[in-house]
Each structure stands twice: as C-alpha cells, then as structure tokens.
Length: 367
Ligand SMILES: *Cc1c(COP(=O)(O)O)cnc(C)c1O
Image (cartoon, rainbow, N blue to C red):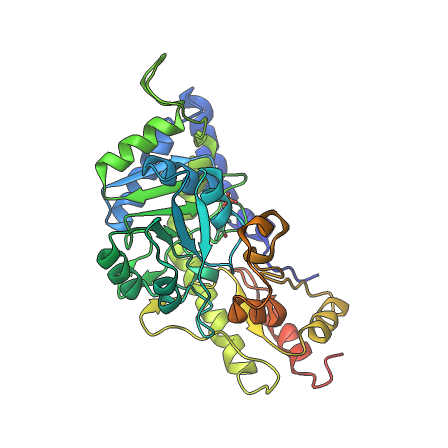
C-alpha cells in the first residue's frame, strides 16, 4: 500500500534524535510548558519574525483562544471559507460568534477577496483566511480589505508551516496566526499540539492566561480560561521536526513538480496551480477531475491510497442548517468538493512509488 502520508517512515528517519529529546525531557523532571516548550516558542517566533509564539494543546484551540482573547463572541461575525477543515468555522461558533462564508477562488482554492468584501457587515469583526493545502491565501488583498473596514485578520495556517507570501513567512502576515501540530500536518508531532504566532504583546499575554485557566499568578484567577497546554515531550519531538521542515517542504515541492511534469498533459486532470505571490508547500497534493470516482477506484485497486478534501462544504453541514445557507450559494467551493482528490504526498514518497501512481492516473479509461 502506498499511503497518502507515511508517518512511520517520517518518524523512523528521526528516531534517534527524538529518543534523545525524550530522554532529556525525562531527566529534566518538567513535563508540561517547560524549557522545551519555551525553546520551541522562541525558535518559531524567531523563524517567522514575530514577537511572540504561544504553544497550546491543538490547532483548534489555537483558533478558539485567539478569537476569545480578541473578545470576539456573541453577536459578532467572522468571515471564513466554506472549503476547509471544519475546525476553521467550529472555532468561530465555539466562542459564540457566527461564521459567515465567502466563496473560494477556482484556481487557488483559497478564499476570494471579492466575495469577502460582499460579506462584510456592521457585525463583522475578523477574517480567517485558510492557507489551504499549504498555499497562502491572497493576503495582500485581504489585509487591505481588513484595514479599510477595521477588521482583524487571523491566519489559519494549520496546513502551511514554512510557506511564504511575497517572501514573508505564513504566520507573520495577519494580526495573529494559528498552526496545528497534528501528526499528519506537514509539521507535526506524535499527538496533538498547536501554536499561535503574533506580534501583539497584549494578545499574547491574554492567550497565555487563557491557556492556563485564566491565571497569571498561580491559584489567582481573573477570567475563565482553558486547560490548553503543550507537553514537553511534544515540544521535544517538534524541535527535531522543525530542524527538518525546510528539507521536507522542499522534497514536497520537488514531488509536486514531478506530478505536474508527468501528468500536466492529461486532458481529464487539472494540476494545482501555484499563485505567483505564494510559495506552496503541498501539505496535500489535490488534483481536479470530472472522472474522480473512476480514478480513485483505479488507485485503490492498485493499492494506492487517495482521499477527498473536502467532500462536504461547511455551509451545507447539518450543524450549520440554522445559518440558512443553500446548495448553490458557493458554486466554486461546491464544484471543488465534487472534483478534487488527493494523491500521496509526503517527503518520504519515492520516485518509484510516484511513478506507479502516475502510471495509474495516465490510463485513459482509469482502470
Ligand atoms: C488541522 C486543521 C485545524 C485544526 O487543527 P487540530 O490540531 O486538529 O485541532 C484547523 N484548521 C485547518 C485548516 C486544519 O487543517
């Protein structure tokens, strides 16, 4: 079986470094929010050129705590894309605010600034662009819109660690940014984790307080918070993977080029298109086809894993029926949900395996 991601190969490649990091944690006697977490926060802030990085329990919490720290809640609207993982909208609902969707661009699959503009109301407080599949959203236009309308921009960078936009790193482009370290993300740990990056010290202070039960002084609480901390073991693992991330992202880009080179001429396939301002890191490699089901079946029959990101748009989710959206409201996102499928993409995919995948996809009748 050729898998979409191969975490076993990834972690085996850095097993000795990870074991050493784990040993250091064991010997340190500190297991939650200790020196390894501090080191990780410092390294990520420095790399992104931001003042602060605050590690939390997962990427969803990163979004929730950021929204809550900004005071966004009941009666507020936050604009995001309907074509993303559920957590992007779930976090907005979790703090009591209302997700308002804007359709995506058919080429980048990212939120369309023109549609954001149409969705801005008096209640809008923030925009959450998602850097989908590792490709940065149109941050120049989004930032201009936000400035003009006095809105916050919170990047959902959960799929895009290491990518950049106009030579500035993702995670440094909005007022704040949220990353996930779920194992399958391009920078992941062996469990859950997340981080918020920002250059706003006031926001950072509030998030630090929220992640530990609303306290800055032990046993004194001045607001209701969360238990959303990162463990030292995860920080130790992430420090090892962080040192590899540029090499791994580069490998993804090379494999993406190879897919394009060998499949770009196939008439029933459309390859992902890189925006001229953004450096895609291919957290996922998704292609478009009217013959998706047939191609996916052929891949599965050849022991090649595929997946659909995302088969059901967020505005059509049962839980959001109350928001009053209809089928047809976001035609681009809906069409992508019927045509996109992912093929294996990870730094440890061999060219030989990739050639097998390419051969299956090139078969005209797809079987
Ligand atoms: C994974 C992901 C999240 C949530 O991250 P978790 O760590 O799983 O909570 C949020 N947004 C996007 C776009 C994601 O891909």
